[in-house]
Length: 295
Image (cartoon, rainbow, N blue to C red):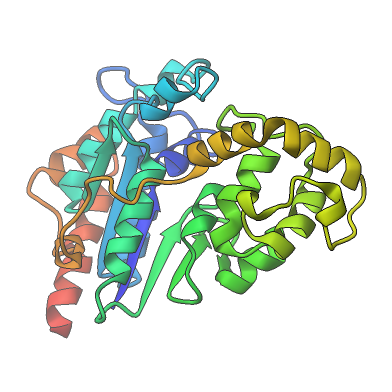
């Protein structure tokens, strides 16, 4: 079997800015939810059998306690923020497992679920459905891959190396040095994507990079500045790496059996009525019936 773990937060943001505004009978914005549910339903119609969706039920996480500059919900449009709970309810009614994260982030849930699924020999491949570079650290050969559904790009370990210049196991070091503006931490001065890739392709991890430039056995542009920056702020780089490291101990699932989709609940009818997409209910029922006919 194949297992799909989906970044619901990314999907909600993507659809919010891509689809027309739609309001329910109470005047609440639901256009993005309608888009995400339609997208997930299409996956189920394509015979995706095991699926879980992670969301940021609250945008803040334990990382905000570690770093005051870490990303928050500030600046998120209320019409978008108000759709998280609606999306979680709609996915649950569709019969899809949802992980609404509070202490952890949705990315942590995806990492934990992917690791747990890959532990089971009956799982052929795990697809982490998000373009977020943070999840590249979870890629493992061709067994655990990252899938950008919108762009149609599948990224295995070779794909991570081609895109970032480092192995998946060096991605947290890469982020610790380069930083991640989207998550709110800056990295070290002078360490850009290209120079970081050259250094880490040789040394793999931050603590393995010699502090003395004389001990470097690679040539990289601006090496003196890089070495000085690392020597002065090595502990900060290691801290940023900690922020970038996803928590695979986030509470998600015990067995991939929990992710098997068997059809919508009766409550999905009311959800579809609220979203004004009655056809979704018929499609979900048909997809479930087709699945039964193949058993």
